[in-house]
Each structure stands twice: as C-alpha cells, then as structure tokens.
Image 1 (cartoon, helix red, strand yellow):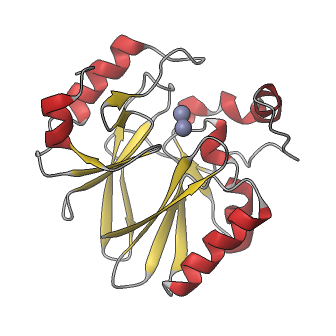
Image 2 (spheres, helix red, strand yellow; image 1 turned 135 degrees about the vertical axis):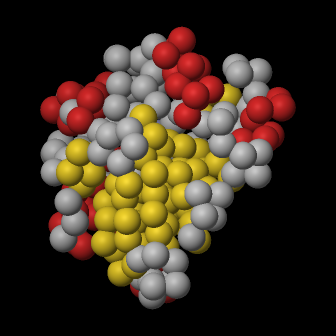
Length: 211
Ligand SMILES: [Zn+2]
Ligand SMILES: [Zn+2]
C-alpha cells in the first residue's frame, strides 16, 4: 500500500490517499476547506492516475471533515466512520464558527458505520479497523498489516497523543486504548498521524512521554 499525504486547513490536518497497483484508492479524513485545497486533492488523484472508491474517516472532528461533502459529491462515495462520533456532524457549523471558520453547511452524515475489528477492502488492500476512543468517542485507526502502516487519526502523534479535553474525550481511556490497540503492533509499523510528521510504533514505544 502506498500513502500520499496532503496537509490542509488552518489546523494543518493530514489527509491521506491510500492506494496500490490496482489504482483504486481510499481518501481518509478529507480536510480541504478552500477551493484551492479541493483542486489540489483532485489534481493529486489525477496525477497518480487513481480511482477513489472509499471515503474513510478516523473521527468526525471539524478539521477532518471540512472536505467530506466535496469528496462524497465529486466521486460519488458514501462517508464511512464510527457511529459514536455522529453528534459532531450536527454541531459542525457552530463549532467551526467558534474557531473563527465559516462553513456553508454541516458535512454529510456517514452512511457506512465502522467498528472495531471490521475490515475495509479495496484494490488488493485490506485495512483493519481498530477503535481507539478517548480523543473522540468514535476514534478509529486503519491498520494495513501487509505494508506495516497505520493511519492513526488524532490518537497518536510523533511524541504526543491526542488531546482529551474536547467533548467526549477521556485521557485514561485514550492511553489504555493506545496501549492495547497500537502499542501491540510491531516496532517497524509506520504511523501516519492526523497532524504533524510520520513516526513509527517503535519510536513512540521508546520515547513518547505519554506512554
Ligand atoms: Zn481530532
Ligand atoms: Zn485533528
């Protein structure tokens, strides 16, 4: 599995495009807020010759869903996410305004619900869904065992973990879920966080002060 990351919106959110030799791709956490950002996503997909077939979301915080409506419409895809984050959809516009960001509409409600242990398949890729609540109630990560890659959303960052002071957050729950669902992966697994640079499970095991 190959990963192409793009960083969008004032929150510097990482949007990931996952693909393989079949050229089918999944767009994870589309964070595009401006027309220019939307155009960059479309151009990147075109340049790589990809066909989007999945719209996946690690969680439904505003910075990860600004571009969900655009991707759903443009590529005719059903948004997929964990059900426990649904309340964020209705609060999106208001919540964005509290951060000084004006959006035209709330993002589309997920049409496919993912839960712990589910498998998402496209191309020759299988992603295992792992539920990691604590940053948000419905936080999930996508693990591709064959390539040793995990798309971690805002659960785990290089040298840090997700904040737990937002609605539905819980620090102890987050840490224990990271220990159980991420730190049990091999050291060499590459972590693509929702913000900031790449890391590995081994690097975080050895040096992350929160773990
Ligand atoms: Zn978040
Ligand atoms: Zn985020």
